[in-house]
Length: 137
Length: 436
Image (cartoon, rainbow over all chains, first blue to last red; front, side, top):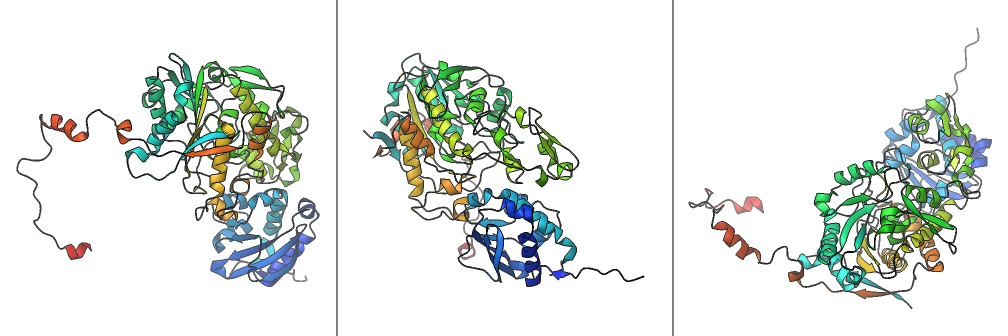
């Protein structure tokens, strides 16, 4: 019997992990349909795990993904590792975390409210990453 | 011609600068005594706060006005109306629920010194129909009967933000707050062919059905039974939707529903129309407005919580013009820097000069000026105001008893004194250096 190949695990928050996430978003037709018009820039920051990324959304498509924080990004998403882990594992609803201020979104939120379907789809994509994520960060 | 708006700043260091004293003083300085003839039935309209909301007007601010109306020979009653079922944990949807919530929040006939009447009846159907031939969107509106029947009205408003209307000021206090539940369906565009919520974009693919942790809310949200959940997804019969907004907040955040284009803007306009309907139930000069621009939370007192205020307390104002008084409050907020860690700061409108409510309060970035713009267009009032700063009144005017306290207590102490004859047992000296 040939050995069943396990998918390679990517360390949560590593550049490889972020690139895989961006790839999944950029090829998800539902997400791209919901994100038409979402042209903005984001920082994602997990201070207690030293994770920081920034990217530009071009009709939702993640472009120019880079490590580190962009001081000019329109939106900053920040929260502790434990909370992000719960979101990724599907144990905590992302919007609940935002409303409880466990995750903060700094920036003109009404602009993002129009893209809630895209956000929900993005969370589904994040949850789909659980299988290939090494959570030991 | 500009409307006069009488204004007092928010700081206080003595009796005459208390918010309660300012409310009473502005009532007089603005000439509201002229609103009330002897024997008039006078509605004191306010929002008594949602269940678990903590930023509504304090009862004392209402009581001083009630007492003033009584002193003028009027017959006051404190009033508001039942709500639509817009959130799963609100408790003002029937008159009975509202009175329970009002009592929890400190409003009762005992604390107010007058009756509290939920003006549109048990479930919100007790109303009068008002024609609005010149309405911006509404051509008729339904005003709660008890409010429509009152001879005069003093409108006490907690000025703050609002997720749909963007600002919750005097216009909204009467536009939404004096409309019956039937009127609220109307102004929320229930069944409207273009903007009604039945035209929402529906994406059942995004719903996890009964597997969602929040399934209980969506399953039980709709009084029309237009929404049903299956194991995997959500079903919606849009033909049954009457636009009560019951599913809006919950499902907006998961993207299952997207509100029709124009809904928020047109609802804001309808609020101004509805305010006009309310004003039509009164003779000119019989309605006075006092805005308390304090505890300026991003969202209304109609949610069962209260966030950190977006800006510091701005002051108290009074006017006969609901548009002018709201315009001044918006301008004052714009001119003021946001409070750190508030939603205004979080959403990037923190500087003095930034308009706070469009980004800081509205769910969808609906402009704060819509109510003002439409109000001016339909003749509800003018955005052009003359701000008249009022200095505090004489403390004698607000005293709780005729005699100053010393003379009063002197009489009482004749029957016994709390200070013991032998004095108190205490150490003669202590180590002051320990306390410094």
